[in-house]
Length: 302
Image 1 (cartoon, rainbow, N blue to C red):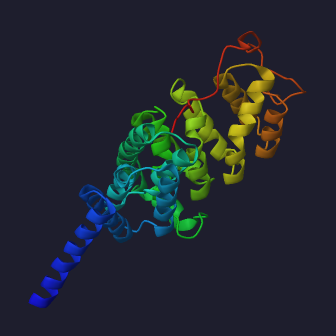
Image 2 (image 1 turned 180 degrees about the vertical axis):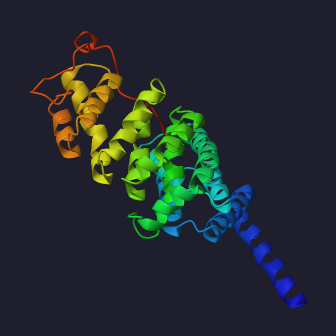
Image 3 (image 1 turned 60 degrees about the vertical axis):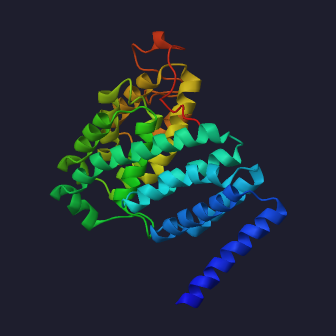
């Protein structure tokens, strides 16, 4: 035992001597040890090593210090250690580094996302425990292997909260989606995709309208694929019609009420047909709102 201890002391002394000879400051060695321990914690918490390695490579390319990288990884590791999804936080860090965003902007945004993730979990977890919700998860869950509906909902809800949608609005939306009349006509994958686009909709300014739209869309046959295309279709409809997003949502709601199929609604939006009628059709009362709105709340950075 004493021999092992002495050997450990000699190794440390040799490292210190090498650092001194090479002009490497002692604090750099300490930072390396701290980063290694953080990576070990990430491994133990179930975070994919490939993501961490990608971050380290981007850090090297940007010439950032170990401490700067630690500041980006630490919030995600803490989430994973608390059984909360963390990959979306790390992906945002990777995105920021690849775009050349300064770490002084990335780190605050990462911390904001981390806080939003915890807020989202406080809303999603009780909803997931409802018997009627558990039934639909047991009946059919079309998410990819290894994905959990709970984690995906926490991720999508956290993105909306980061974009200033209140946790209360998220809670009410989930309550509306959790009605039997909605759950009986949809799947877990569809619900996740619907929640993924909340931050692209005018939820902050028109929460009741947006909630009604999402529940109608789920009941009206919108599937995961249609929800994924919807933000682009809404964006195109606004460009063509020059009316506010809330009015476009209202027009789509009218189409849903008439029983227009999801694929036809998407095509109408791409064509700028808000009311679902002939080309350029805009519902009565919306004509005077041209040019007065902008789409959604998606104004994140980092």
